[in-house]
Image 1 (cartoon, one colour):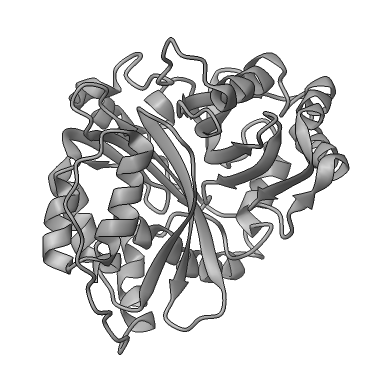
Image 2 (image 1 turned 135 degrees about the vertical axis):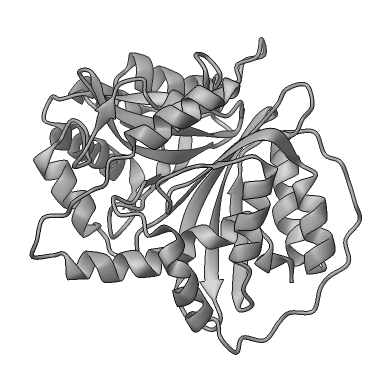
Length: 360
């Protein structure tokens, strides 16, 4: 089935290994590998990663969701100041749901929304800021990729999805930070074992389309093609990627670069017994953010995630992808250690500010 071909399916499953590793290292401080050399090499060899390569996809048309979040974060400083936290709560709907996947339970209602953001401010201890690396051009909903910065360093990255109600108030927010430990290719054998013996699904025919709006591209790839015949649907999937595509899956230290690497990634992690379920989309044009969950065979629980897709405004092909899955342990053990040890950066080992264009 096409759920084996969907690129996003891999991301949340890799958290299984993260759980085991985090449990193992509870009694010893971790050693996080430095990835500066790989980043420098990529920046030097791909012109799209130069200065200004990853814009916020602004247009002349006002987009309510996008402009609200830019105002709250960049002007209001909602993540790092008490006054900003109050401004955030003021624009939340009475029935708002804050589903920050770092925490074990969601925050419900305006009062808990204020408490949530005040906790975020307190955790930073007056250190650093949150930088928006990319933001989709959604009106009713949007998503943004972010990085924690402090002084001349940058650290934790992640993605946030925000949905407004008809009055323009925030009614839903989901946020997922990157995992501190990234298992990478070590999970392939684990996934093979988990899904061994799973029954393949019957492919569902689909009608080929060529959507040009980012949110419609996402829906086509992960609703229509996701259920189609595997080989045919994978071929169709790959026609939507630009030759210069950069694919960031936060279960891996290094990004995938170009269609060949993306396709190999898809084919390497194709397994039966995996069901990908998109849950919410924004209405972005040049960039789109959407939330999802993945079920493994008959397991009662699902794993949530967020994806951010950016298109070339001219060719309408995908030039950038960011996938981030939630941790199965909440709060994550390593993530908690890192935030306590380095509250301004949220990671054990930071990198020079500006060394990861677009939060790469």
